[in-house]
Image (cartoon, rainbow over all chains, first blue to last red; front, side, top):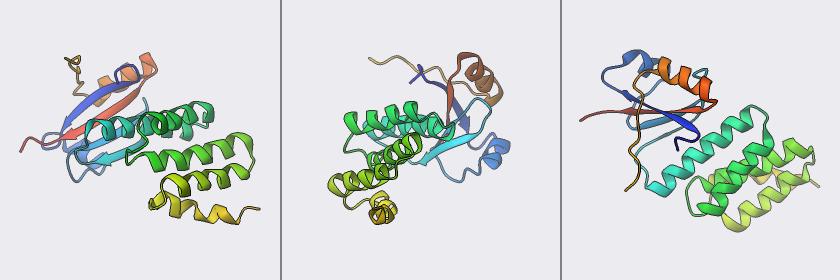
Length: 138
Length: 33
């Protein structure tokens, strides 16, 4: 983790300014920030180690995605799918993998291919519902 | 045994370190019940 992140702990009861700035209402709340303090991903609640790590990698992938670094984003999303395919973060990683492939190639078929993987591997996920519209792509 | 995490407690310090090391920040809001 420390290869990619500076870990920062904030006491919810003692740092009201940051609690307000990031609109934190419950703990634990984990937020992935860039070095300017801008938020890219958050999750709330205690997670088992594998789900926690998957969420952290997802957060890194979303930073890369937000910065239009799609190759690096895809590496993060693929890492989740290979190492933690059963994690709750995996369907979201698959969704963003398809979107990153599309953004990188400008080929809409990547969105449809991403949906097909979601339907095959994560049929009951909200991310499969969110990608359903891509079935209309010819 | 895993390596102990060395947590920062200041966002300003974490941002400076993140900028210098080209890293991200993992910010954990916790509550001692």
